[in-house]
Length: 224
Image 1 (tube, rainbow, N blue to C red):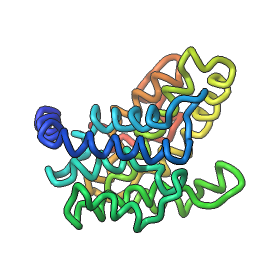
Image 2 (cartoon, rainbow, N blue to C red):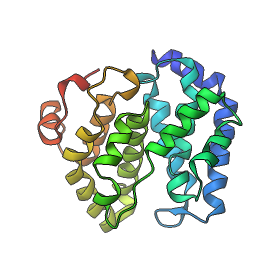
Image 3 (cartoon, rainbow, N blue to C red):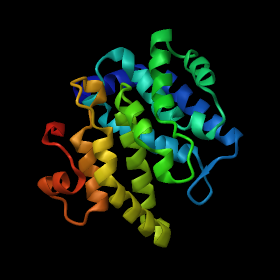
Image 4 (cartoon, rainbow, N blue to C red):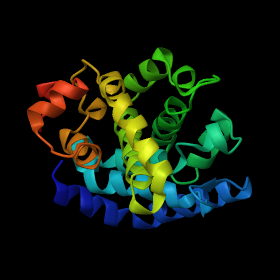
């Protein structure tokens, strides 16, 4: 799908996407969840959706997938952080989508829900990434989620803690990116190299495409 076609569809479905956005904001606000230094959690959700808006044309396979893709970005933390169940999310999605679309949207949210664990590694182990790799659009939304967190954590306003998280994210990349990559040819499971490059520009002082592949285990097949 071309960027122009994708943006036209985004405009076509502007109202349901905005309704989904507001519903997600209200959900996280209802459980008093914040982001960073006391920001509304909706700040993070908007950043994830911005990645979906900017790069979604690289993975979106058909018109019917646009609204589920945005729903997945806005509700990706609703099970993990906002006390919703799988069926709760499905019922919410059905307000704006067909049953087929709502199932796709809910599967994205479910795939991005961390496992139980005491550490980051336990919460995002091999079973977790396997579920993401098998779920249409989940690898892309997870990548947009990471881009949002990296962008915020590495901002100048984050100071010392931001520098610490920058190193955490940089250290995780050689495992994180290959863990999202599926051998399947389904474009809905694609990891756009354009997004990887943006991450590299934030985390690496001097960006070189071959060096990105070497450091982070990025396959050349991810190239556009």
